[in-house]
Image 1: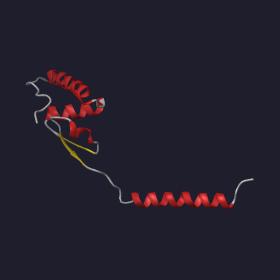
Image 2: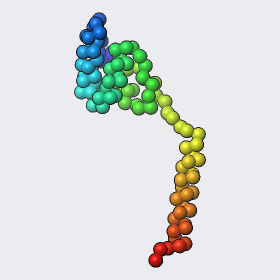
Image 3: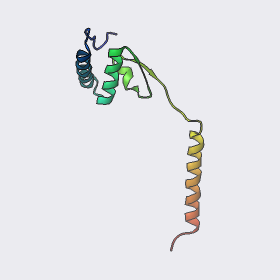
Image 4: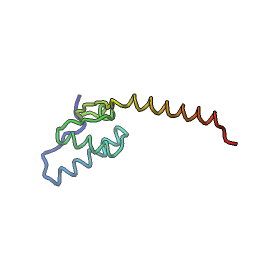
Length: 99
């Protein structure tokens, strides 16, 4: 697959103009947020990999992207605790209805 943008040799000022133009091109082509477009254009210009939980980058040509997921070991415990607490509070309110 061909990269979306091939930057010209640049000075520091030219690099910023390339970055901004590429960001707008990516926003127009992929209809993504300016923040995601900024990260994508920066990764392309610097030839870096994006590590993100956001899968928006896997559709952008020229971006090297590695996705991952985050799961906390206590997340299943927390969801069980919330369910139990909620059901106990429902049970208590049904046993002692307000007048």
